[in-house]
Image (cartoon, rainbow, N blue to C red):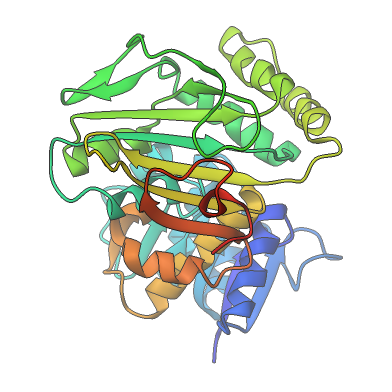
Length: 347
């Protein structure tokens, strides 16, 4: 059996992807990259000829390099020439635009991570018809790597103007008057801040589900990280500052990520709560899940976002079997952050 290749498989998200692929018996898995001490196969992801030779030996490739969109195109192109599927945990709108216009004979799945990815996929379990009101909360106590911090700052720069925006009445509404949450955030067991932020993924979700309103809060249990992540809009922070802030906030605390999705227009307020060990771990689990769906023939050829083509009910079953997930519940509201349903470690 030919192998699955994971480029950048020794980074934090890459390691998690490799571990989950192997746990689900999808090996052999070849870890590729520039570092000969950590990679099974030494390759230069900027060299098209090297990439084409590497992809020719695989049945599927996952790109976990965290590179800017333009630097990810050669890997996707090499996969297409080799006739194998391409999975990318990153690669939101900018990469999609760069790859559009090509007819792909195999699946090309972008945004197969935690955010974007799970944040666009799981709400589809709740929304059964148009005109609904959805509120989302995502965040936790986590440490940023330099690469993750650089990716986040680049995303904020590309998405300028969406902080404090919501989706309402069929379009994005800037400065919509939705307040910052301070103190108690639903299903988070510690004091936190919630800042409204409307990403391209959330806009796609709102259009797809024909939502009347969507409010998405990025949740920060630590004050230092929140201050550091708001500052990029004034151009006054760099990736190292974000890493330092995350380490100070997380000192002495357990890492976790939590995502909450809630319908606000039903008396029972149907809710999904997902808890995980960290953003890298949840991203790795999602990338591996996308690879599994592709290998099972559940994804058609062509260019896709993961949240649009993965089946949410199937995804929940896979997540229940993922080491990255410490708790996953779908239930009606009435539980609180202190109830068993909201505690980490319950599935």
